[in-house]
Length: 210
View 1 (cartoon, rainbow, N blue to C red):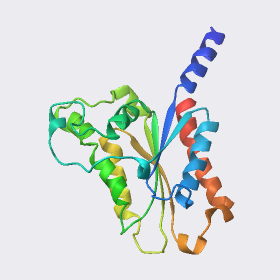
View 2 (view 1 turned 120 degrees about the horizontal axis):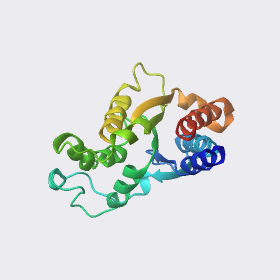
View 3 (view 1 turned 30 degrees about the vertical axis):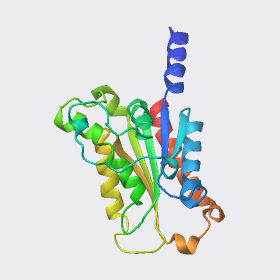
């Protein structure tokens, strides 16, 4: 019996998938480096990981065609069609983005708007894509940086990300918010910040594999 339980636990742990969503237009900037460390933490905790760079995706902004009101997908045929199944099947999500104009980058927001597909399923048809059992484990980690020390600089970004997590049935569980990045400049010169991202990712991963 003990060997069966061990094998079952290993099988379940290996099947846990964490997606890292990079909202920054810079594929090798400070935000990307923090996300990479968080994903490494989740991977070391026993999860499989996938990094998605929003800037590299080809899609249009939501046109409110309302096709998804009655269907499980969007009528617009672009890269979003590849993302929907990934976000249905994942176990947890890490979003990493800089603050832009007291909010998030436009392309990241446009991508979130295209998740009307999930919104309609959950709130209009009352048939969420995510079962009640899986909602319990799906966790969200938010990593965000700001160039300057501005009061309440993260408020707008957090509200948007929390709403997105709610729409896709992923609990907003943890965050790493770093301001004054213009003074920090290169995050690799501050190993404590990278280690903080790693630890956040590791904790998220362990919550899935333990």
